[in-house]
Image 1 (tube, rainbow, N blue to C red):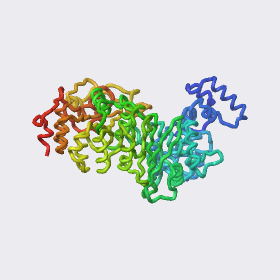
Image 2 (image 1 turned 120 degrees about the vertical axis):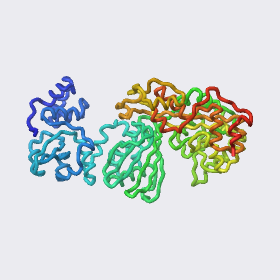
Image 3 (image 1 turned 180 degrees about the vertical axis):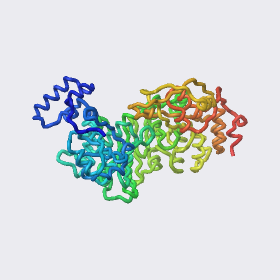
Image 4 (image 1 turned 60 degrees about the vertical axis):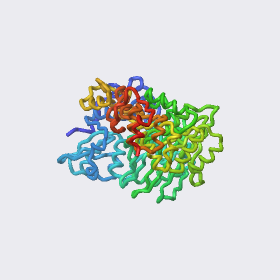
Length: 594
């Protein structure tokens, strides 16, 4: 058993210098500050406060001299059942966390090793041998909160240590008006906590924040690069106050808990606007809150930033610059459709054109574009706004999404009347968008007459540039590449680093397939072909399938083969020389239509 709680041989400052955590000059400066303050603060506290070194470095040095192990606490490191071996008041008062018990020895983590009476007290209470380890006070508090959800041990200020003060202040300005419980400094704990959650999400590049109450805790998760990851766990007793604070800032009904609600707020963070869309829904344990984060810094408004191949970029640009017709962008939810359309509008906007959008909600503010918000409570549906915009001398119109037959017919009508129309559809690929319009009740000849092109896309996680490394592909990987006519000797992946949170990925990149509608395809669409027939035509016409486009980006080291296979359906090897069918006999889409 270790012999803890003995007087260390060297002073803390000398230990930190010896370990290389602190310079001699900074140590002398800290000692002078300590003397000037009348020794009211411990040297370790002063060093951490002045950011001369970290709390972990101070504890590591103390652990060396007290001959105790230093542990970085993790939920896998301790057994929650063992926590019950010591009374709650002892755990909270002395910041003690029981980790595990082997035979007759209980191992506990402590934050203050200089308490010479603590070991004997713990032995007497536990009635067994006790072995000590050192951990940070912050880690012990968080671990206790996970194991003891009803205790008030949770300290919000511990969470805020990592957040820049200016970031919190800027967000706080937006919250204070909605927080009835803020203190005289306007810094209530709940407002601070909301500030921390928002700023942490923005710093990590999250697109969504999920706040989920459970029986034992509040689980907070961030969606980063399309994947949900746990951010923090909060005490369950904070749920009502936290939800009320969020609802007030979004001008939602605080008293309503049985129906879903939606709200919106804009906050300022580091001199830029962050738009938050808030949705709440009742759960058995309370209300789940999802906050969608729109950060203007992360919005690519140039088509060249969206990962287009040179061929697809050139062909897509030619479609969006045509004087009239309908251009569709398809894909499932969260596949970047709105980002692509906004980048397209930004590319063609000018002072000479009247460009209007109908959106629900308006996601990105665009210069030189008139953006109109759908409000069904006031009767401002997609179709109603479209009818009025026809009297607004509109040149280019963007419809956020074609959701129903009325909107689909209006979009086709506007495109046929000489306007250029952009919109989105939730379909799996480019060819199925045509059949989706037919199922909505739009006649095939109207679709064929107005349609210019359909862009289908998915998002794949991008390999982290900081930790990217090459490796030799397996035989299975080589077979997948060779199936698509692609040769490669090496592939790339992310090794994992601090920047990418050890995932190997940072950011996302789009993979595309673009179906350009020519005269022969218009004839095919007019007689309502099947998706299979349209796909056969696309093969002959030289459309680059989505999987092929993705695997080319794998070969270029932009994403991984696993990401592309997960995001795309099996494709086909595109023709080296596109076949431009111009007659009915040469068009398989026409001959197979039924």
